[in-house]
Image 1 (cartoon, rainbow, N blue to C red):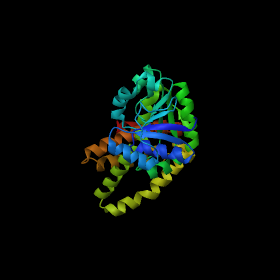
Image 2 (image 1 turned 90 degrees about the horizontal axis):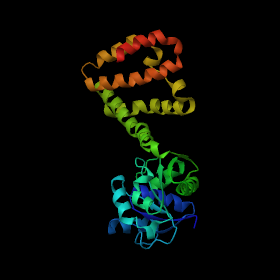
Image 3 (image 1 turned 45 degrees about the vertical axis):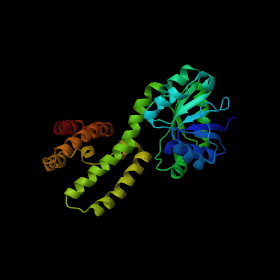
Image 4 (image 1 turned 180 degrees about the vertical axis):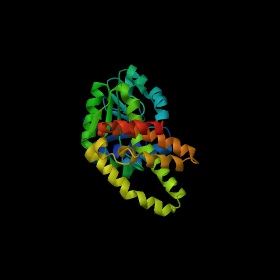
Length: 285
Protein backbone atom coordinates (compact mmCIF):
# COMPACT_ATOMS: atom_id res chain seq x y z
CA UNK A 1 0.00 0.00 0.00
CA UNK A 2 2.87 2.39 0.80
CA UNK A 3 4.32 2.14 -2.71
CA UNK A 4 1.20 2.29 -4.86
CA UNK A 5 -0.61 5.19 -6.49
CA UNK A 6 -2.91 6.11 -9.36
CA UNK A 7 -2.47 8.85 -11.94
CA UNK A 8 -5.05 11.22 -13.38
CA UNK A 9 -3.66 13.30 -16.25
CA UNK A 10 -1.10 11.82 -18.63
CA UNK A 11 0.92 14.85 -19.69
CA UNK A 12 4.71 15.17 -19.59
CA UNK A 13 4.91 16.00 -15.88
CA UNK A 14 2.54 13.29 -14.71
CA UNK A 15 4.15 10.59 -16.84
CA UNK A 16 7.68 11.69 -15.92
CA UNK A 17 7.01 11.53 -12.17
CA UNK A 18 5.04 8.29 -12.51
CA UNK A 19 7.84 6.63 -14.51
CA UNK A 20 10.44 7.83 -12.00
CA UNK A 21 8.44 6.32 -9.14
CA UNK A 22 7.88 3.09 -11.06
CA UNK A 23 11.64 2.77 -11.59
CA UNK A 24 12.01 2.88 -7.80
CA UNK A 25 9.58 0.07 -7.11
CA UNK A 26 6.25 1.89 -6.99
CA UNK A 27 3.19 0.23 -8.52
CA UNK A 28 0.80 2.28 -10.66
CA UNK A 29 -2.59 0.67 -10.15
CA UNK A 30 -4.10 2.58 -13.08
CA UNK A 31 -4.32 5.83 -15.01
CA UNK A 32 -7.06 8.03 -16.38
CA UNK A 33 -7.22 11.29 -18.29
CA UNK A 34 -9.69 13.75 -19.72
CA UNK A 35 -9.46 12.31 -23.24
CA UNK A 36 -9.39 8.74 -24.49
CA UNK A 37 -6.27 9.47 -26.53
CA UNK A 38 -4.40 10.75 -23.48
CA UNK A 39 -5.63 7.81 -21.40
CA UNK A 40 -4.34 5.33 -24.01
CA UNK A 41 -1.05 7.21 -24.23
CA UNK A 42 -0.57 7.04 -20.48
CA UNK A 43 -1.41 3.35 -20.24
CA UNK A 44 1.15 2.58 -22.95
CA UNK A 45 3.90 4.62 -21.33
CA UNK A 46 3.27 3.26 -17.85
CA UNK A 47 2.25 -0.30 -18.82
CA UNK A 48 -0.66 0.00 -16.41
CA UNK A 49 -4.43 -0.50 -16.63
CA UNK A 50 -6.83 2.21 -17.70
CA UNK A 51 -9.32 2.88 -14.93
CA UNK A 52 -12.13 5.32 -14.27
CA UNK A 53 -11.05 7.84 -11.66
CA UNK A 54 -12.39 8.25 -9.04
CA UNK A 55 -15.03 5.51 -9.41
CA UNK A 56 -12.59 2.59 -9.75
CA UNK A 57 -9.96 3.74 -7.27
CA UNK A 58 -9.22 1.20 -4.53
CA UNK A 59 -9.57 2.63 -1.01
CA UNK A 60 -6.76 4.80 0.37
CA UNK A 61 -4.53 4.57 -2.72
CA UNK A 62 -2.83 7.99 -3.24
CA UNK A 63 -3.96 9.86 -6.33
CA UNK A 64 -1.55 11.97 -8.38
CA UNK A 65 -3.12 14.77 -10.44
CA UNK A 66 -0.88 15.36 -13.46
CA UNK A 67 -2.96 17.83 -15.46
CA UNK A 68 -2.01 21.39 -16.42
CA UNK A 69 -2.47 24.14 -13.85
CA UNK A 70 -5.46 25.55 -15.72
CA UNK A 71 -7.24 22.19 -15.52
CA UNK A 72 -6.64 21.41 -11.84
CA UNK A 73 -9.77 23.21 -10.63
CA UNK A 74 -12.01 21.39 -13.13
CA UNK A 75 -10.49 18.01 -12.24
CA UNK A 76 -10.91 18.74 -8.54
CA UNK A 77 -14.59 19.50 -9.10
CA UNK A 78 -15.04 16.33 -11.16
CA UNK A 79 -13.38 13.83 -8.82
CA UNK A 80 -13.94 15.31 -5.38
CA UNK A 81 -16.86 13.20 -4.19
CA UNK A 82 -16.53 12.22 -0.53
CA UNK A 83 -17.13 8.51 -1.06
CA UNK A 84 -14.16 8.36 -3.43
CA UNK A 85 -11.56 10.68 -1.92
CA UNK A 86 -12.27 10.85 1.81
CA UNK A 87 -9.13 9.99 3.82
CA UNK A 88 -7.15 9.57 0.59
CA UNK A 89 -3.95 11.47 -0.22
CA UNK A 90 -4.66 13.52 -3.36
CA UNK A 91 -1.87 15.68 -4.74
CA UNK A 92 -1.03 17.73 -7.82
CA UNK A 93 2.29 18.55 -9.50
CA UNK A 94 1.85 22.29 -10.01
CA UNK A 95 4.60 24.64 -8.92
CA UNK A 96 2.39 27.71 -8.98
CA UNK A 97 -0.73 26.49 -7.17
CA UNK A 98 -0.95 25.43 -3.52
CA UNK A 99 -2.57 22.18 -2.44
CA UNK A 100 -5.75 24.03 -1.52
CA UNK A 101 -6.43 24.35 -5.26
CA UNK A 102 -7.86 20.86 -4.70
CA UNK A 103 -10.56 22.51 -2.64
CA UNK A 104 -13.46 20.12 -3.22
CA UNK A 105 -11.25 17.13 -2.47
CA UNK A 106 -10.07 18.87 0.70
CA UNK A 107 -13.59 19.71 1.87
CA UNK A 108 -14.75 16.13 1.32
CA UNK A 109 -12.00 14.67 3.47
CA UNK A 110 -8.98 14.14 1.21
CA UNK A 111 -5.48 14.79 2.52
CA UNK A 112 -4.33 17.21 -0.17
CA UNK A 113 -0.78 18.11 -1.12
CA UNK A 114 1.49 19.24 -3.93
CA UNK A 115 4.74 17.79 -5.22
CA UNK A 116 6.68 19.98 -7.64
CA UNK A 117 10.00 18.94 -9.19
CA UNK A 118 12.52 21.69 -9.86
CA UNK A 119 13.52 20.15 -13.15
CA UNK A 120 12.97 20.41 -16.90
CA UNK A 121 10.74 17.60 -18.20
CA UNK A 122 10.87 17.70 -22.01
CA UNK A 123 9.30 14.25 -22.48
CA UNK A 124 8.34 11.38 -20.16
CA UNK A 125 11.48 9.26 -20.62
CA UNK A 126 13.98 12.12 -20.41
CA UNK A 127 11.94 13.68 -17.64
CA UNK A 128 12.04 10.51 -15.54
CA UNK A 129 15.83 10.36 -15.92
CA UNK A 130 16.22 14.06 -15.10
CA UNK A 131 14.18 13.61 -11.93
CA UNK A 132 16.93 11.48 -10.40
CA UNK A 133 18.80 14.75 -9.82
CA UNK A 134 15.78 16.93 -9.04
CA UNK A 135 14.88 18.65 -5.82
CA UNK A 136 11.17 18.49 -5.00
CA UNK A 137 9.09 21.19 -3.34
CA UNK A 138 6.44 19.66 -1.08
CA UNK A 139 3.44 21.38 0.49
CA UNK A 140 0.12 20.32 1.98
CA UNK A 141 -1.61 18.52 4.83
CA UNK A 142 0.56 16.52 7.21
CA UNK A 143 -0.47 13.07 5.96
CA UNK A 144 0.04 14.14 2.35
CA UNK A 145 3.44 15.67 3.15
CA UNK A 146 4.62 12.40 4.72
CA UNK A 147 3.54 10.43 1.64
CA UNK A 148 5.20 12.90 -0.73
CA UNK A 149 8.43 12.95 1.28
CA UNK A 150 8.67 9.19 0.76
CA UNK A 151 8.12 9.61 -2.98
CA UNK A 152 10.73 12.36 -3.30
CA UNK A 153 13.18 10.33 -1.24
CA UNK A 154 12.66 7.32 -3.51
CA UNK A 155 13.29 9.32 -6.69
CA UNK A 156 16.20 11.58 -5.76
CA UNK A 157 16.46 11.92 -1.99
CA UNK A 158 16.16 15.71 -2.27
CA UNK A 159 13.19 17.80 -1.15
CA UNK A 160 12.14 20.76 0.97
CA UNK A 161 8.85 21.84 2.51
CA UNK A 162 7.15 25.03 1.32
CA UNK A 163 4.60 26.75 3.60
CA UNK A 164 1.26 27.09 1.83
CA UNK A 165 1.45 30.90 1.99
CA UNK A 166 4.85 30.83 0.29
CA UNK A 167 3.90 28.73 -2.72
CA UNK A 168 3.52 31.61 -5.17
CA UNK A 169 6.83 33.22 -4.18
CA UNK A 170 8.45 29.80 -4.46
CA UNK A 171 7.24 29.52 -8.04
CA UNK A 172 8.40 33.04 -8.87
CA UNK A 173 11.86 32.13 -7.59
CA UNK A 174 11.92 29.15 -9.94
CA UNK A 175 10.86 31.39 -12.84
CA UNK A 176 13.77 33.71 -12.09
CA UNK A 177 16.24 30.82 -11.84
CA UNK A 178 15.18 29.08 -15.04
CA UNK A 179 12.96 31.09 -17.39
CA UNK A 180 14.47 34.52 -16.85
CA UNK A 181 17.99 33.11 -17.01
CA UNK A 182 17.15 32.05 -20.57
CA UNK A 183 15.82 35.55 -21.24
CA UNK A 184 19.05 37.15 -19.98
CA UNK A 185 21.18 34.84 -22.09
CA UNK A 186 19.08 35.66 -25.15
CA UNK A 187 19.52 39.38 -24.44
CA UNK A 188 23.30 38.87 -24.13
CA UNK A 189 23.33 37.03 -27.43
CA UNK A 190 21.30 39.76 -29.14
CA UNK A 191 23.69 42.47 -27.92
CA UNK A 192 26.70 40.50 -29.11
CA UNK A 193 25.15 40.15 -32.56
CA UNK A 194 24.51 43.91 -32.63
CA UNK A 195 28.21 44.30 -31.89
CA UNK A 196 28.91 42.45 -35.15
CA UNK A 197 29.49 38.88 -33.94
CA UNK A 198 27.75 36.11 -35.88
CA UNK A 199 24.92 34.10 -34.34
CA UNK A 200 26.91 30.86 -34.23
CA UNK A 201 29.92 32.56 -32.64
CA UNK A 202 27.77 34.39 -30.10
CA UNK A 203 26.26 31.11 -28.88
CA UNK A 204 29.69 29.57 -28.35
CA UNK A 205 31.20 32.70 -26.87
CA UNK A 206 29.24 32.69 -23.63
CA UNK A 207 29.09 28.98 -22.87
CA UNK A 208 32.29 28.71 -20.81
CA UNK A 209 31.65 32.05 -19.11
CA UNK A 210 28.11 31.09 -18.10
CA UNK A 211 29.09 27.60 -16.97
CA UNK A 212 31.91 28.96 -14.80
CA UNK A 213 29.69 31.69 -13.37
CA UNK A 214 27.03 29.17 -12.37
CA UNK A 215 29.66 26.82 -10.93
CA UNK A 216 31.14 29.64 -8.84
CA UNK A 217 27.70 30.73 -7.67
CA UNK A 218 26.86 27.31 -6.28
CA UNK A 219 30.30 26.74 -4.77
CA UNK A 220 30.97 30.24 -3.38
CA UNK A 221 27.54 31.86 -3.07
CA UNK A 222 26.31 35.12 -4.63
CA UNK A 223 28.49 37.52 -2.65
CA UNK A 224 31.86 35.88 -3.21
CA UNK A 225 31.18 34.94 -6.83
CA UNK A 226 30.16 38.49 -7.80
CA UNK A 227 32.50 40.21 -10.27
CA UNK A 228 32.23 42.91 -12.93
CA UNK A 229 32.13 46.69 -13.23
CA UNK A 230 29.47 47.25 -10.55
CA UNK A 231 31.38 45.14 -8.02
CA UNK A 232 34.61 47.02 -8.87
CA UNK A 233 32.88 50.39 -8.71
CA UNK A 234 34.07 51.20 -12.24
CA UNK A 235 32.16 54.43 -12.90
CA UNK A 236 33.77 55.15 -16.27
CA UNK A 237 32.95 51.74 -17.67
CA UNK A 238 29.33 51.96 -16.54
CA UNK A 239 29.04 55.42 -18.10
CA UNK A 240 30.37 53.99 -21.37
CA UNK A 241 27.90 51.10 -21.18
CA UNK A 242 24.96 53.43 -20.69
CA UNK A 243 26.13 55.64 -23.55
CA UNK A 244 26.43 52.64 -25.87
CA UNK A 245 22.89 51.61 -24.93
CA UNK A 246 21.41 55.05 -25.60
CA UNK A 247 19.86 53.83 -28.87
CA UNK A 248 18.61 50.62 -27.25
CA UNK A 249 16.21 51.95 -24.60
CA UNK A 250 14.76 48.58 -23.55
CA UNK A 251 18.21 47.05 -23.09
CA UNK A 252 19.32 50.16 -21.19
CA UNK A 253 16.31 49.89 -18.88
CA UNK A 254 17.09 46.24 -18.17
CA UNK A 255 20.78 47.05 -17.63
CA UNK A 256 19.92 49.64 -14.99
CA UNK A 257 17.51 47.34 -13.15
CA UNK A 258 20.09 44.56 -13.02
CA UNK A 259 22.83 46.99 -12.01
CA UNK A 260 20.71 48.23 -9.11
CA UNK A 261 20.23 44.70 -7.83
CA UNK A 262 23.89 43.90 -8.38
CA UNK A 263 24.84 46.96 -6.36
CA UNK A 264 22.97 45.55 -3.35
CA UNK A 265 25.23 42.48 -3.47
CA UNK A 266 28.33 44.60 -4.08
CA UNK A 267 27.64 46.68 -0.96
CA UNK A 268 27.50 43.49 1.09
CA UNK A 269 30.80 42.28 -0.37
CA UNK A 270 32.64 45.60 -0.03
CA UNK A 271 31.10 47.84 2.66
CA UNK A 272 34.33 49.86 2.58
CA UNK A 273 33.46 51.07 -0.94
CA UNK A 274 30.40 53.01 0.21
CA UNK A 275 31.42 56.34 -1.31
CA UNK A 276 32.15 54.98 -4.77
CA UNK A 277 29.01 52.86 -4.68
CA UNK A 278 26.95 55.91 -3.73
CA UNK A 279 28.30 57.67 -6.83
CA UNK A 280 27.59 54.62 -8.94
CA UNK A 281 24.02 54.45 -7.69
CA UNK A 282 23.35 57.93 -9.10
CA UNK A 283 24.21 56.63 -12.57
CA UNK A 284 21.82 53.70 -12.55
CA UNK A 285 18.66 55.04 -10.92
